[in-house]
Amino acid sequence: MTQQPLLAPPAGHPILDQADTLLARGRAGDVVDLLAPHVGREPEHVGAWHRMAQARLELGDPQGAMRAAWAAWQQDPDGPESLFWISRSCSAAGDHTEAIETAASACRQDPGNPRLHNRLGEAQLADGRIGDAIANLQVAVELAGYDADLRVTYAHALFAAGRPLTAREELGRALTLDPRHAGAQAALSRFENLMRAVVDAPTLAQAADEFAESLRVRPATPKSQNRDAFAYAMRVSFVWFFTALLGVGAFDLMGLVTVPDGLYMTLLCASGIFAIVARLAKPKLS
Image (cartoon, rainbow, N blue to C red; front, side, top):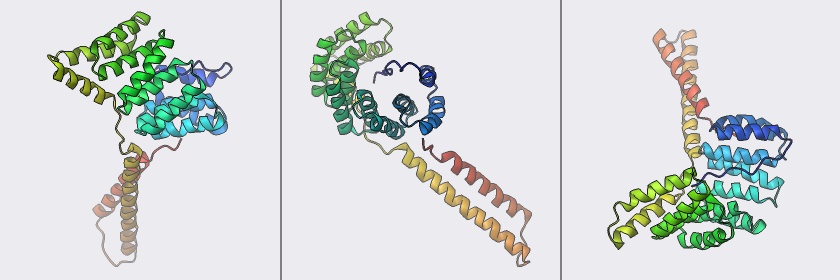
């Protein structure tokens, strides 16, 4: 999907400028570290929550992004920007119904904003609703044909519907608007690769289906759940090994058994390893 920037940050918020600079450099982890204490002190700072949501998405953490986006929405229920990030987070998490509904709500709140219509089109394509995406994007392009991102997403929908010539025309218009548009260039290359295998109607349909499938986002087990389970297993292992170390030491002190030094070292090292791995596997809460 096309990566879209945030709206211009409000004046007088240097921390947002700093966060935007870090995001532009691909340092999403640093953005989280920068903003986590800030939103803790100033939870009403909507713009900071938006940057946090974007950073979490770039780190592959849609659940964390969703929490940040909802925190922003609670401070500004009428703001379409918060709905934008809720929608993107839901799409990334595979919750397509919520993603489409929130994007549509954002469009109703700010109907003249092509970025919001583009988000709705992306959400529909991620759910495989190609016809709905075309209907929405066609109207949006007619009203905001100056937006290159919008034309690229429209081209995606057209190709997925089996209309490669019209899709290429839209990419051409997007590149006319922005000759260096990375999304348009990538889509054009992808279209050319898929069309090499097209020789008739069935192969065209196959290419269109393959491209449409590549746009879909399937619901999956969140990484955080796997991470939590792994961390739990490591904590349990640490408790067992550390308990064994204490028990062996107690029996040795009481003279009930003779414990080799190697056993102490083995239990101590194993306990330390499990403790370290459990700590590293623990997910961040911000």
